[in-house]
Image (cartoon, rainbow, N blue to C red):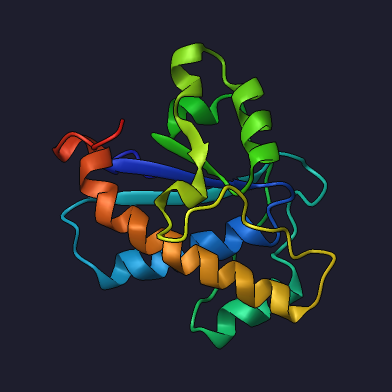
Length: 169
């Protein structure tokens, strides 16, 4: 955990082997390309611990690699109640995972740190679909949504980090 970070983001899906590690890889790559004047720590986790310690799904790694994102070194972990203290924003890939995050939050104040990832996408929607049981096109669709949401998130990150008030919050 980067204690010197100005802002800490946790990306959350169900198993932490498809959507959230792909989002983590995209976000890390885009942060490396842009100077926001912020030190941002990014991590990902799953609401369930089915795959704890496992690398991302091979299809997720392949789809990410086709677009230039390296996620093979990531390892799945389960989200913890303590993550609400450690992270400034916990972004859920869908409404079910958001509900699980909100139920895990230790206080009502900290519960407000959990939000939907696609709030930041130009194509507003609630859910990044889980590609686990589908084919490779599902992983490409996830990356399309993730790249769009990451761009929106990066545009708002200085505001979210307290550099200016965020409209609508």
